[in-house]
Length: 67
Image 1 (cartoon, helix red, strand yellow):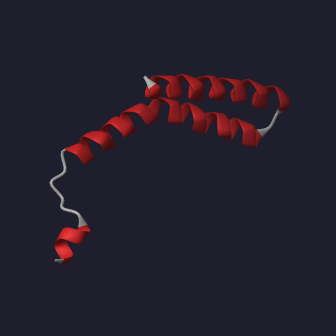
Image 2: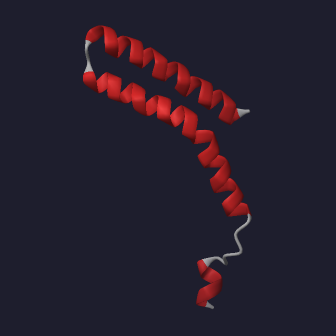
């Protein structure tokens, strides 16, 4: 639920920054909008992949290796 809300917030912020940057001819704002829109599409999959990899890991903590 939180990832879905974060995705919507990033999408709305990206579209807003895109409109404002285009109207005011601000290249840096347009770049920020592009990065926000990229993050809105990529973030949920990246977090799920990291979580699945972390949960499926068989690595031991470093403290166990030092004993």
